[in-house]
Length: 192
Image (cartoon, rainbow, N blue to C red; front, side, top):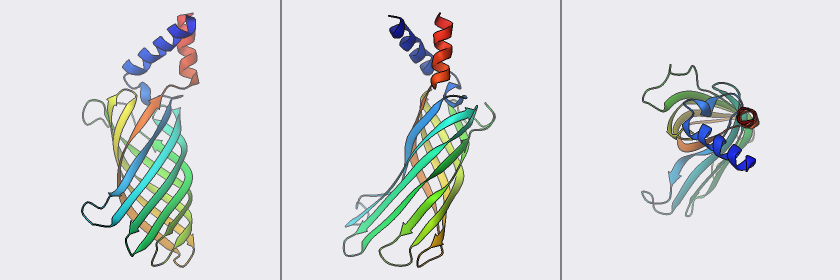
């Protein structure tokens, strides 16, 4: 019964916390999707890039974690392009209330660094150090689920038949914000 009460109280805290989603100790998990094309406007083309990520808030508004990138583009008779990456992620939301455009929304900045590759079917490939950075906007549908848009510059410097590759991408996605162990312990302490 005690665990059921703790779970219920934690659920209430998550559902009704004003800025609880970006407080120290919380966890962010989700994904962004960009370059979406399933052949509707260009027949015989499939193009999709997905970017799952997870981060922990080390202080209010600042999350550090990791991300993975996988992109695939195929065209009938044209071969397959593959993009990949794995690296460290940082996201900063800024001061509470200072960057809120509409209720339940926040601007943020995101940057990554890691190992990336751009390998087109035709042309030069680049594999090496990848960096990306850019602004984003999150609208919190609930206190624990955010829909977002993210504009990022992506660059790869390294080796291959081309020493440098870069692009600008616009992605959409969602993030889920969960309370960390420290929040669960606080709720448990308050209940005792």
